[in-house]
Image (cartoon, rainbow, N blue to C red):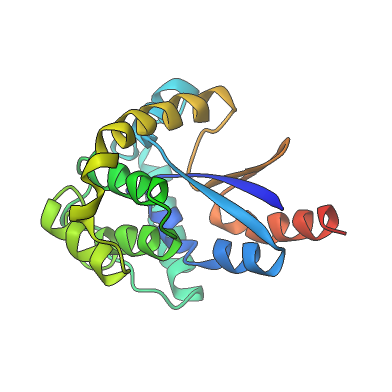
Length: 198
């Protein structure tokens, strides 16, 4: 089975706007997804990216137009100025990593976590929010305690590996040597998997 290494950030609006289309592609192409939450700010810092508030006003303005456009085309709710962004990405990221380590399917939970920020004005650094989002997706946050310390370390390893492998934004999918940056590259990933799986 082909594996998709999926590097993403729980704070990324473009990851949110990918929706569950990656999961649809993976199901259609019989591929497995390894979810790799990462520290997007550290990735930016190491790869020449610039945090949104430090970008030129023209780039900031275009980003807002693009986000609205993508949300409208995908019929998704999007709050351009979420109440809790940016926030600490580590707690939610570690929870998702721990859930995956515990053998849980986390695709829907990951999307719901990001949606909580970008569509519901919720703080994904709040343990109550994390508990609620996971529970709505069949995952008991309280049962993940044994996995959380290792998950914190894995979050840092994910970030380091992302930088090492050439990741510079989110969402970012890697299949073998092929790299796909952005929610708008999902059709390219789909086509590549179709060729790979023959």
